[in-house]
Image (cartoon, rainbow, N blue to C red; front, side, top):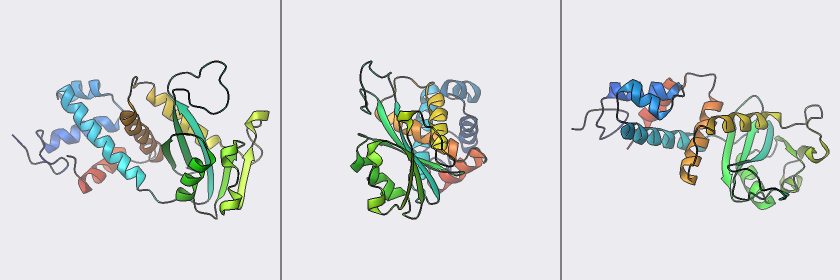
Length: 226
């Protein structure tokens, strides 16, 4: 039997029960805990959580380009690095590139490599040219001035330099720590699942000072699940 539910078309659970599920999800509870507290079947909970994460990912992807003081960096998620391997090869890891507006939001994207072409394409699509860009010394960031970013400042991590006045990437590195801490709960994720969990981290980080439950209700009301 399909119940009327403004947040989930063709839903087999009531709107009140969906709101309860969403409220528990907003509190950062895991699927097992949500199922236990809501009385819903674990498979039903998993289905709804995946659909909710899809909506959150879509919302994050639609955010406007960044401007102002911007930090850029890449990070590696997954298995430990292989001993003896140097450079920025992933070696089985998932590479994520991030753009962070100081005192603002972060945007993340899974990338195939850390090449200049890959990183510059994302920066040019997400960062306004008049911005001040801060990065480390990785060669993938070479040439940003040549493509219109006149203010590009760098720290040299290779020489143990992590901050020089306002020149640092501590903000985006703070997000990497936040994301990795959360994602340790979810082991053995495939790439599609990892993307949704990564975007959930992005959403929770960007709106950490707001009522996530009310925000998600509004997002899903505008674009119902299923």
